[in-house]
Image (cartoon, rainbow, N blue to C red; front, side, top):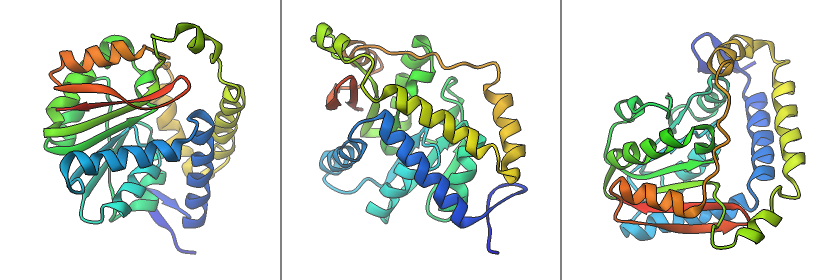
Length: 253
């Protein structure tokens, strides 16, 4: 049976890799309504900002590489890099995307990730990732991201980002109707993948990474993110896309 190497010493079966990535996509669609629309919007805006396809693209917290893969296919000449801290998700990305997308381990809670990725990126995407960090680290992230972008480069941050101009409406939408089901699907996905013997060494590594590191569950309104981006030196910052309490902030370096 053919295998692909997702990490040193880990041989992943391609059909299994494809299945786990597909089911991860289904889980994420439960968390982010109309995720496909968000992705299409950010890609079209990136092309419009530069008047061409971006040449260097960085997807932070990219998990098993679904968005990175779609961007690499859309922009065949681009150098696309994915970064994540989760060894299991990185193994799935590497197993599926070797030769298409560079996949790096990195931790957004420190500025060292910038040294690993280098600068000069036309586009940086961060989807459903920053809520893992406390506010001080999110604020520092905007500084780090600006250093990582080329002049005129585009940062897109998508996460829970309520509109503080509509407090009663945002409150009524919390929690979202499908939120409990999405949380259950996420837990089930990890329970099921734990049965894969080939991934057990990486699951042990994952436990070492996250065992004493709980998500901050940081949720800030649009005004907070916009102010943080502008304080970091972004010339323009504002909402690019919204669906309920989820939104995508665009910031231009």
